[in-house]
Length: 148
Image 1 (cartoon, rainbow, N blue to C red):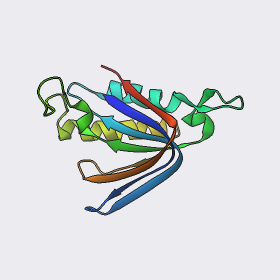
Image 2: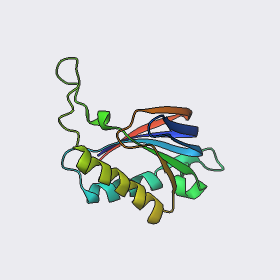
Image 3: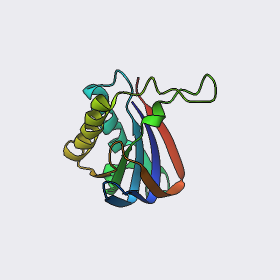
Image 4: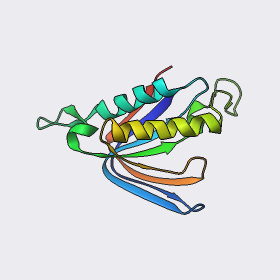
């Protein structure tokens, strides 16, 4: 499981078919890729890690506060291309990406853990859809979080 985490001032996702639009303010935009072999234990770990990452400034301008601390929002976008392997040739191989029937429930599980166990306001894209993402990165602050 791999996540690209961006601290944002705002972010939105728009899908034409089926019609869908979500937006957040002051929080994290997370692009989440599910890989072959991932399971519920990785989903639980990822939700805990994302909700507790200290990426927001405290009163001393130090990145010392988490999304939970600031009451921020999270936009969760599934992105299978994060599992792409570019080590050979010029066309990425997606052999490490989990099949949709495995990946979609795990993305939903990460969302559910964030909402229920960590009390994070989560908005999402549409699994498998072509999505348009707009965001204003704050900092910029961008991290890659991965657990094998």
